[in-house]
Amino acid sequence: MVVEPKVRDFICTTAHPIGCRENVKQQIAYTKKLGTVDGPKKVLVIGSSTGYGLASRITAAYGCQAATLGVMFERAASGKRTATAGWYNNLAFEQQAQQDGLYAKTINGDAFSQEVKDQIIQIIRQDLGQVDMVVYSLAAPRRTMADGTVYRSVLKTVGEEFKNKNLDLKNRQVTEACIPPASEEEIEATVKVMGGEDWMDWMKALAEAGVLASNSITVAYSYIGPALTHPIYYNGTIGMAKKHLYQTSIDITEQLRDLGVKAYISVNKALVTQASAAIPVVPLYITILYKVMKEKGLHEGCIEQMNRLFREKLGKGNAVVDSDNQIRLDDYEMKPEIQQEVMKYWDEISSETIDQMADVDGYWEDFYHMFGFQIDGVDYTQDVEL
Image (cartoon, rainbow, N blue to C red; front, side, top):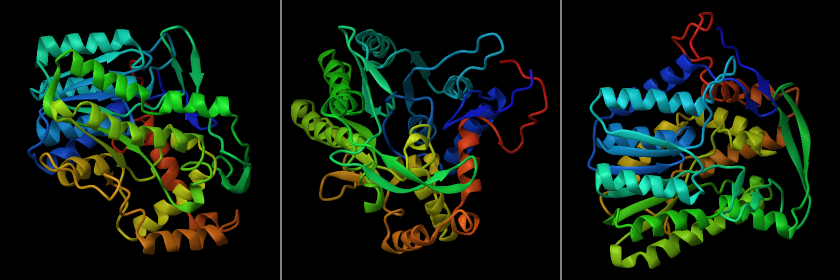
């Protein structure tokens, strides 16, 4: 059948199998062009099918020649319903990696569950012996505990209501967002889903099973951003979860000290992802940021960011960190000259000036690329097998 994008709110309910495959191939080609570097050789990526997780896996495999094991939670095609983009991405990656002689296996299931942890441990034992790097790149809206309790994350402020400019992407209009404060229960639930508890569970399970190599590293991803977005992000419910994630990095390093494990938070650049598209205020900021960073020649996507992480920031045993022991891949975004120009546009932008002061087309391009659409070299008029 011919597959077309069907966009609802901030998600696309269809994905194009050939487009997703081509998107993965382009990321692989970019990484291969940069050559190989000395790095981890057996890598577990938890949340490996889209965005930063997928880019991490591609970079580990093709930048470091690493065997990679992935965990994803994706849906296969059913009847006339396409699979999720992550399903197609993973299929494309595995096929290409195996064709190129690289080990690549994936478990499709709930990464929060003990069952998936046990499955991964068994595969590591059988196939790899141990892993020397764990990437934790999970972005989930809910978490089901062993006792059946379900926690759901929310995108709200903490303390008081927040109002600011927002972007109606569909109509290309600058509007106003009004974000309500979260209750204590909602904050707790968001931390349960997006904080570091499960990351710690994974690391302890791997260590106790003997499948975590000595002096291994683990990294989880976060975002800080400018003061403009702090009420909804850094100081909002998601920020509370990210602060917990940061504390967990300290706790993992301390608790697994005997193994020599080092845990890091990589603070990444603001990009169009399935997670960021849902956050009020942020899409308008991203469209302005894209315009400014592209004009300055500093714009990066997920694959450029992850290649810089593996090649320049992780180093060989000693990561390049700030005073809080965090890796800063947002260093280009947070340059004073970049932020000054972004804030200038932010103050002046309106529906009438949106096309002059923001890169809305670039936002939509990245959005469609996530689902395999608008990729150069793909004929979208042809029938495809789902």
